[in-house]
Image (cartoon, rainbow, N blue to C red; front, side):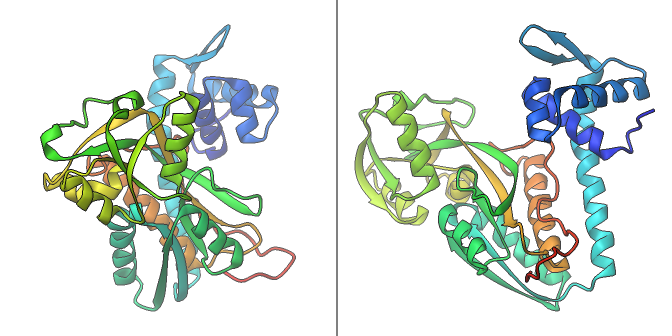
Length: 329
């Protein structure tokens, strides 16, 4: 009889919840559809309730299934944090960690996480590399970074990547535009407005350009910049509107220096990524877990107003047994 202590079943159940399809969930879990169906049936038998209702286009959750979904992600995160803490206790946390970050996550998430980590672990030295998602992916591949926080879409086969946060992109405008986070805009609403955009290659720019091309729209790009600070200065001075994430503009938005609204068609997901062949040290594991935990805490407190946790997210940078070929952390 399956019990809630079987974390594998809970994790795969969350795949089903996210996909609303046993076939799609099976692909994500690297299982056959009959195998994942048996796992759901085992959960149902163990709990004594029906979790799913089948229909022609897939599955839908019962009330009991929704209740389990709402609890399961938290149970998995708690269990994985315990595992990380136990592992950390067995291996002293010291040495050096190199983490790659994108600029848009620096102020809201990564800088506070690194500061907290250094207070908790005074014997560890941290190097923070900053750049685009593509540049940080390449830093991990080249061994310059132990792991990185990047936008999905920049993955590569030699990397282990785990998506943990998703959010819409935002239209950013001067305060007098009176944009509101609770009033989403369409991409077409940007047409005819001068735009201040970050230069390519950049994940946000790629997402925007792809959506514009798909809809047959053409943006009026008035200025291209290299960083969010310059973009926000130009927006405040009335040069045009911009497109960024909440994390990138949270400070100026809360200070009332700009206004913002979600763009319904444009979404970005954030992931932790590391090299497959390198065994993560206790310090790498601990910092990765802390970054993810702080992100989930920001969402829970409403401080990352537009973001949501990706179902099944857990500690992405996990220690594994040493590979047969030697590697460094």
